[in-house]
Amino acid sequence: MKRHGKFLKLTGAVLILISILLAFGWFVWLAPVRHIYSIGWIKSHSHRALWEEDQKSVGRIGVTHDVGIDIGKWGDKAWATWIIKHIKPGQNIASCESSHVGEALADITNHQLEPNTETWRAWWQTNQDKTQVEWIREGFAERGLVLRDPLTTNNIIDLLALSHLATNSPIYTNIPVYLHGSLRMNAFRWLRDSGLSPWDVRDAINGTQSDVLHQDQSQLSIALIDYAEWYGINWDGPGKLSFRKDFDTHFYFEYTFVKINWFAGLTILALALVGTVLWRRHVLK
Image (cartoon, rainbow, N blue to C red):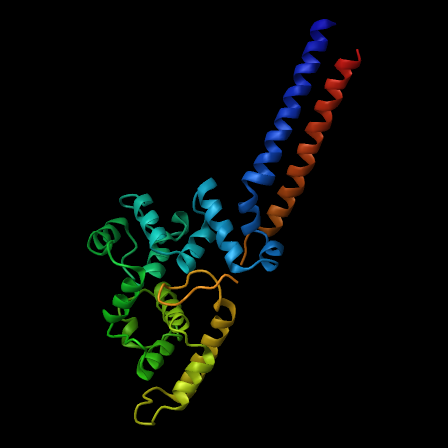
């Protein structure tokens, strides 16, 4: 009987300990992972809050598919450095298996290179001492788009033209289609971080002489609408370039995570209850 009582006591203590560890792991340690895959959480939080959870998630379970995409949208030079240090020789860094870190590098640097480790490490050896702003500016310059400071009207028009992902613009020459979005995003955030709202861009275009306006007016109007839509979502989010003062002001597996969340909670509660019953049963005896 004494052995049986000790076994019950030990079993109860172990179950209580397991329930505590599981509760900490699921509700605390893995909280960022649950958040970034919860549509409900994302709808009620800002991009800044999501970006904070993304970064915590990387520190706890590594880069996942959606986080890799967010790193491209909001990451800075520090994140480019992190990716370069973690990619492996011979790795296809544009695949889902690699969490699209190659596309993240293209987004952060505005250089649309071959999606393999060797190409990017060779580029890094030459460019690692430059700032992110220099990377992005040079990425446009290498494709014939030399950006002035402040932007000229022609600069604004050329950046808007990159809104059309299927455009025949020579700037897109030799760039895989899946990387067109990289140029588009950097064009839009260069406009935003130069302090140009959609209304500023509209005024600049409307004030242009007809001989300078070398793009079709209807296409420019569509591009302006695209920029206005992007600006409305990203006007004060993370990922701003350093030449503009910052302010302080999708999702897969949602249903699965809801089920796991309920399962984890009920399992932890059951373990704690069983452990408590076994413990008390021994104590009462």
